[in-house]
Length: 407
Image 1 (cartoon, rainbow, N blue to C red):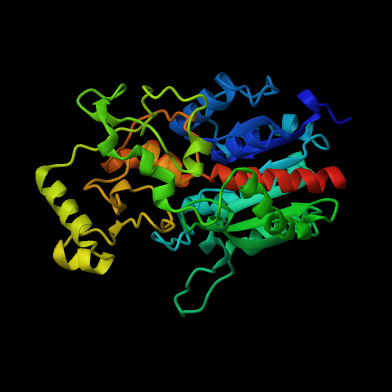
Image 2 (cartoon, rainbow, N blue to C red):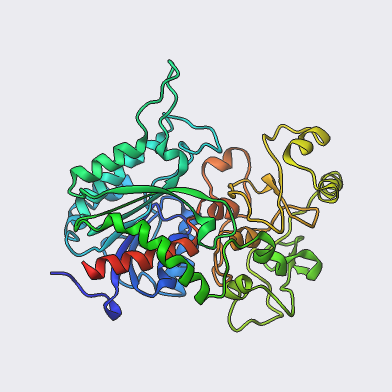
């Protein structure tokens, strides 16, 4: 028998949940209740727990058999398989996709990246839980086969997932590459989305998403596309600085007082205490040479190729953001991007704004890590760069709720 959630909401599980970007969107939708989330990194999970368990109780039905801490999905499948099977028939959706680093065309595509094998763990999880619907997200490169030694393309991992889902009874599993900038997210972020249902309604998802987006954005006073400046101009350093509340020796920015864009109004706290310090809005302490380099880039509005010529570096690319345009896809490396009008990189809060996180969402863990630590820790910039933008997740949540309610 299907167990009711508070308020009769639909129930979902967030897998490979990261810091909770997807769940923020489902929370904002108001039509879903999280059962639990699976995330292996302790820093990312602490961010999710702080915001969506401790302070907003979005996962109020969290099962007793799963401790509220970080978990590897393989461990959950192997040790909690019987408990997962008891959920069979009572879960409306499993949302989330495995880590994307091995598939990303923006990074080093590695066919034998051990994280690529998590697609099989994902399918095993689906087999045990058997939800009514699937929402799977990954980078655009997930649908591109790896280059073989004979220069041919191998089978893309997307086919493994699609065929695996169809073999589990999700015969209508379908996919599309979606550019989130068309949905109000202020960056050109193309993602490979798979939707599947047991009731044969998945093919309507992308049509409904497209049909409903204008109304969704208009209700919030937004016009697509949203520019970088419309997203973060109220967080510019020139509006004032204070001592960072969580980092001794660093300065943090304050909110701009007065007129702000509709996008900023949507994401800023309500009501706003104008003396409040935005969470994670700590400015980097650049060396004098770095500041001079950035000032030259900002003043001369240098392109990526001109930056490489004027300021040779081992970095593959440095991009000066354009304030009057949609931003590029944010990565996990903050020094890939320079602020459109100030000689500095973005703060984590500015990163989060461009990812469409509301300002009430607070990030935990270190701001940055380096060297070998990057293999074991996921700092704030990486948590944000890896996240699913909440503004997309909210629209997907609404469409999926319509599909499942109608069926």
